[in-house]
Structure formats: C-alpha cells, structure tokens
Image (cartoon, rainbow, N blue to C red; front, side):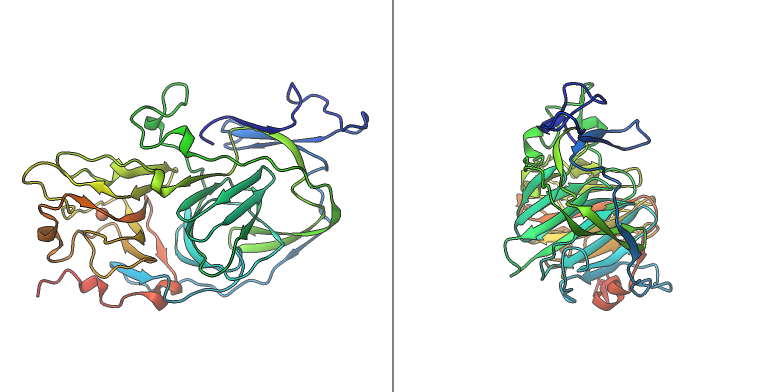
Length: 387
Ligand SMILES: [Fe+2]
C-alpha cells in the first residue's frame, strides 16, 4: 500500500483484452478496490474466473467468548499463560474487541493446506515469534520475528512456518484500512524526510508463478463472527500478474526510527498506522529526553477519548511493573493512568530505554472477553496503591 507495485505479466492497458498463449482464451481481470472504487486498488489477472465455487457451508460456531459483566477497570493479562493450539486460522484467541477492532493472539502449532480470507476486516499479523512465508494471490512475503504483515481485507492467504517450536502471533483486525498517516506523506504520496520510516522499509510480495491446478481447494472465510467453508474448483493462487497499491506487505518493528524530544513527548510521536477508529504506535529503543531535569517516565494522564492497549514484545518497560513478554495492558478511557509507584523516580537521570511494545489506541470502548478473565493479573487495578 505505500507505493505502486507491478509483478508478473499485465496487459499494456487496463480493462482491455489480455489473451492466454493460445491467442483465444482470456485471462480474467479482477479489480480489487477499497472505499467504493475511490480508495487504493490493484488489478489482478487470473487463469480462472475468480467467483467460481463448488459448494458453500457454514462451520459450526464456537462458544460466545464475551464477558458481559466485566468491570470498568485497569487490566493486565498474560496471553502466554493460556497457550492455544492449532493452525494459523483456528489457533486465534480473541481478547479485546469492539465494532471496529479485534485483538487476538495465536500460538500456532500445526500446518494446514487450507486457505483463509477475512472478508470483513483488514488484518495486521504481528509475528512475535516465528519465521516462514506468507502466500497470497500476490506472491510470497517472507516473514520473520517482529514483522508486521499487513493484509488487506478480502485477501486469500496461507501462512507456512519454518517450524513450530515457538510461534506466537498478535493479530489486530480493523474494519477500515491500515493507512500510513497523512502527515508522513508529501503531496505526491511519497514518505516525507521526517517520517519515522521510508519506502525501503516496506516489503511488498515477491512474484511467484501462477498455480494452474484444477481440483478441490478449501477456503475458510471469516465473516464477522461467522465462518464459512468454500470449496473452490481451482487453486486460488492463479494470478499471472497484478499491479496497483493494494497488496499485503511486511514492515519490521526494528526498522521504526523513533523521535525524541527535550522533554517527554506524547504517544502520537510513536505513530505507525492510522485507521478511522484506532491508531497503532510503536515503542522501540530510544534515547530519553535531554532536558537536565526531564522526567522520562510519562506523567499521569486521562486520555478521555481513547482506550489504550499495550502489547509487550521485549525488554524492560520503564513505566510498568510486573509485565512480561506477551502481556497486554488495557487502560480504559474515563480513568487516569501512569507509572506505578517508584517508576517515575527511577526514570529520572536514565539516558535510554530498551523496550519494544505495540500500542493500540481505540476511539470507542473495547469489550474484554472471557480469555481476559482467565489470564488476568487479579490485583493489577490496585498496583498504584502507595504502601
Ligand atoms: Fe497512556
């Protein structure tokens, strides 16, 4: 999405005849677009007609995971304390959700040959641990630890892992696209010189030859909270070429170039992606504020229009006690939060931090699921009490 890409073979003019080598039969063009034909898009050229399906069936629903009487409070839960099992689709466990956003984790333990498509949500798959290849109609995106894999809504894909010794994913779903913030781009769309990343940091797919295979292929479709299985009569990765701005890409958390100030800068300085209903920010190693009396730890704050979520990736998080890799904290709107006792004082005079975390600030309240109830640190909401 950050820039135009062309892979494989495409006709010189879009929406014109494009014949297969026999000179008689046509490749099938598919315009894949966002925002009602006004957003970014790509044109893909298939061996077979994309709508072909042999059969459609609904997969049995899993139990409702809501926790309706959850109190409004601070939450800290450890997503590694209840490990899931399964493939890259069914190992997902939802922790936080609202109408626009779902956050899940997955401990992936098995391979699968089925294909997956999230029909209603764009996805970020953050690879906390694991290495492998992400296959889609657009080609292949190799991925490794701490890669964001940004997957446009409606993309058909498969994830293949090098091994299953330790695979952990953090998945963020959004009903609107993950965008590069407008103020990081100039009037031509190019990333500006003061943006925290550059086009080179975003990795588009590599081309793979189209797969010309007619058989039965299972595609799992997520449609809101329902799941369907489509049986396709041909391999879905039958694209001979495509071009455009809409495609899956990767970005590694370590490539983010943070900004620092003389005194404490607020979280928007760590911005990575925007959506219409929430933002994604990166906390990465950086030098601390350089005013001689600066306090590097954040001040107590009430961000009254945001629920604030942090997924802890690595390191010693300077303002938070008791968190570990795979922890998530939720600090909801309407109540103030900030460093735990002793953390403010401990930060004074520190020169740098070695923390990695992903932050999601939502503009509508999140609901916590039963997975939170089962993994939460019960007395976290009392962790600010001065003893
Ligand atoms: Fe905060």
